[in-house]
Length: 227
Image (cartoon, rainbow, N blue to C red; front, top):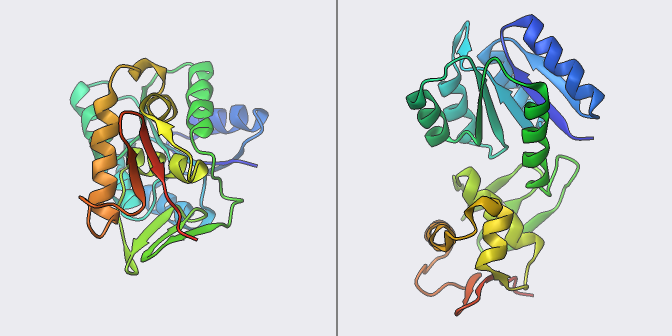
């Protein structure tokens, strides 16, 4: 069962969301403070986080920064702050989505379902993939190189999991765009090139001569997993 953690100090809102999501088949936990929320995120390993920015013991921006230091789970910000700069800041820090209050529960559920569909690996998976000195733990959603933690942005990690799911299969630029960004970005192939370059820079020993993230000229990319 997919699990969701809600960090929200308004008790009635948290209760309403929790009840609605449980009716959708999700396992839901609630924290009312940023400190307890981060502890719950580390111990419960949820599949998605719903986060309010205005919390009694801090702000949600710090929660995003702290969480992104070790986890790439989807973060959906749910906040009364509608200022564009707040949205930009949250997304730049690593949030995956932003919904302002008051909100439609139908829209919230639709967005959650969309994020869950883009994450084929869930907390019940225990597999680990080794690529030479690179280790990818799909259960913890952690990537290490030479035993050092590598920070990947949510988009970089999403692309990585899709390549892993389709290892040794050539993924076209269009397929990667659809899987990672959705069909609304079907004409922006440069997104794929930029983020593939980022993955190579962070994970390949020689990014200009990659061993794992290979180019199929004029077609797309594939992940090569040596035997």
